[in-house]
Image (cartoon, rainbow, N blue to C red; front, side):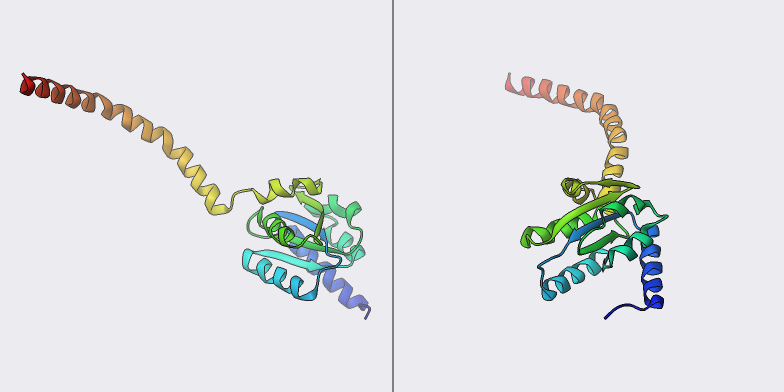
Length: 175
């Protein structure tokens, strides 16, 4: 059943609002995937904070116009499912990469992040981006390392003195 004009406008506004807030996007061809498999993909997407939508290409082109994902307009061809990462930049990449491992019919066509379009080969790089918690952990470890080294350096003369006295004591006890 064809969409009425009001429905088309609503779809474009919804996807445009999502694209304006999203960190990254992945477009994949879903030809040959069953409804049950798509339902599983949608469940995983909801759980991981990814907006997943099948949109007609003409509507998708209008929706991404004026957003960071405008670079994707030329590649929106064929039956595509759009995945937008809302919270974590790598979430859509991880979702599509994990699903495509078990289902070879899902073929990645476009990857976009930061206003730049990348080819399907860059999906793995996007999927390997750390989550927010991992990135904070890496940052904290990096910030904490110089202080830990400084404290160890300050404590070393005392520890060396204690080891030297213990060695002298052991020598005297052995004699």
